[in-house]
Image 1 (spheres, helix red, strand yellow):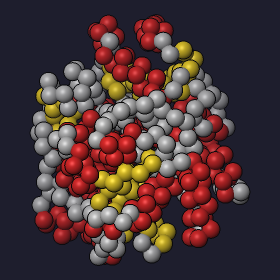
Image 2 (cartoon, protein in one colour; image 1 turned 90 degrees about the vertical axis):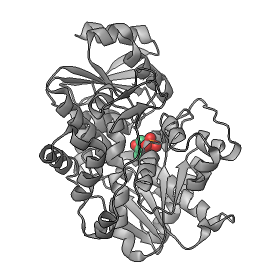
Image 3 (cartoon, protein in one colour; image 1 turned 90 degrees about the horizontal axis):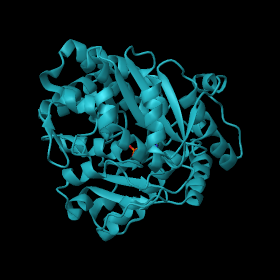
Image 4 (cartoon, protein in one colour; image 1 turned 60 degrees about the horizontal axis):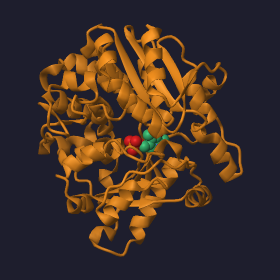
Length: 435
Ligand SMILES: *Cc1c(COP(=O)(O)O)cnc(C)c1O
């Protein structure tokens, strides 16, 4: 399987695609075609474990670049926590993606990417650059912590992540460095792109990206769509996924799963007030905007990086997008109300991101148009444990929530970060002087 840049000027193998992250022409790597799984796989799906599904799906993308034994070992390590589809109400399930070490869904992608990079880098020293709006950084840090030869630089927007998220970014030490940027997430993402494409830095170091632009983050995110089906197929109803979206990596991985043959009925791309994609589906025009700060801050993205991948999946055709995806944007007020409603009616605690996804399912049910509106099972992807956003959740629900020990441990450690203005030269000098 070849991997091709969305800007069409570079084709390479999976190893290079993963080690580079971003293509030389500035595009994102995509598999040259989406592999198909056979009918036997789908018939047998309800009997497979999460790890077996992960292996089968990953194998399709990785081919002979890694031995079956090595891949199995990596998959078993990555997926060493549960991903249950928890029933909220008759027709709504929460796919809890947050049972990993940092309690956000990004653990899945980051753990897989870290192991694939370490495998393919064959022990050569490497610098990994990650811009984060909160959860990516900690999942990446956790995934790479202590991996020999790999230094990780995390760029995060000062004052725009929750106190616990900040602790999860800044308390690792060792091979993990936290760069606190006086700017927005978009500034961090732009700086990361500049670093990765800087000629001088690329001559000095082997640089790579750990953002959702890396194809190694996307591949494992498709596993759990299959896994949700394995759990819910017995309901014998069409299944709709509502994906709380920021950079649209999670949704893109769902599109991969569908193109591989998984009969997903429809997708809802649910966003907060950062509504570039809902607007695009409404008007046909893609206009990036500065990101707005919201209570679902991991989705505060004004220029979603995976839009380029979705465009290539849909051959740049808005009507193709519309066939698969409905997209809605929700205010913080609506999000808070949804959290209260779900708590009151179903005694289930949603984090703000999951609440946005819940609203997406409600909106789809209310939509009068077309035939999607038949009886379906809605699966919202619950992307973070509510305790990761304890301030917001407690304020909204007016009750204390329990902080799992895994998270409490971070609170006890000491923050260490280096502050920077939004100034590429300053960050560049730091990287050079650092080693
Ligand atoms: C990153 C993140 C999202 C958005 O995922 P994308 O793949 O960037 O669309 C949603 N919820 C949480 C909790 C996240 O950390």
